[in-house]
Length: 224
Ligand code: AMP
Picture 1 (cartoon, helix red, strand yellow):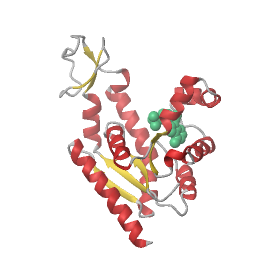
Picture 2 (tube, helix red, strand yellow):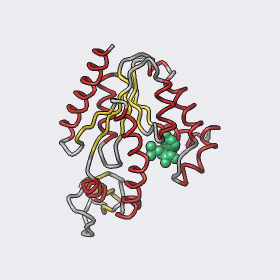
Picture 3 (cartoon, helix red, strand yellow):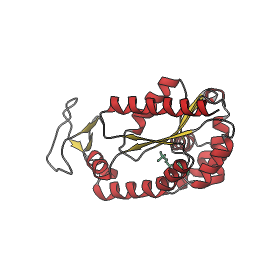
Picture 4 (cartoon, protein in one colour):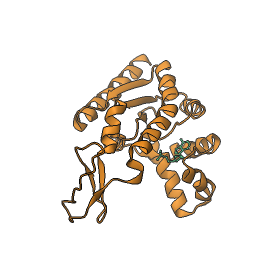
């Protein structure tokens, strides 16, 4: 690992985190490291790790800290993470955050929070539709509307996914907040947090995020 662009990305479901992560990774030529993706791939491949975590993933609870820390330690030691990384989904607990701080001793690390008010997240997640036939994704302007809409690609009926109903959305946001609030406080206390307004148009968010990274790394470099 070197001191290039080591970024922890924090953002609720519906904040556009995936899109922004991809753009930041492209800009700095660093890997996107999503612990959720790594675990899901392991479950799919039925690897020993997958066998170990599949029940936890299915239940929606958190995988053991020690296992996650070892997983991330190994992943960050890989060659492609030498110039930096965008970590997504890790840390999830203060214990993990402290372990990451220790792992990054002597290296720069910044946390970027994609901030979107909860009412807007509910609107965005509630507006998501999927084509029941070809599975194309849509965002309708409607909020929890029940009017029938059709897929422009295949004419199939657009439906809301089971986990995009308002009760499930609120539970997911609450779970996120419970995990994220202490992490945000942790990075803020360390002076490592930058907050980006996730309600702005996607390209503006990217520019704001990249400029926050440049600024953070400029300041960190200047401090050295
Ligand atoms: P995600 O895609 O980030 O929502 O992660 C999917 C699932 O993987 C979570 O519900 C957890 O079961 C597990 N997981 C991912 N990252 C972590 C982590 N840092 N600590 C504990 N469990 C995790």
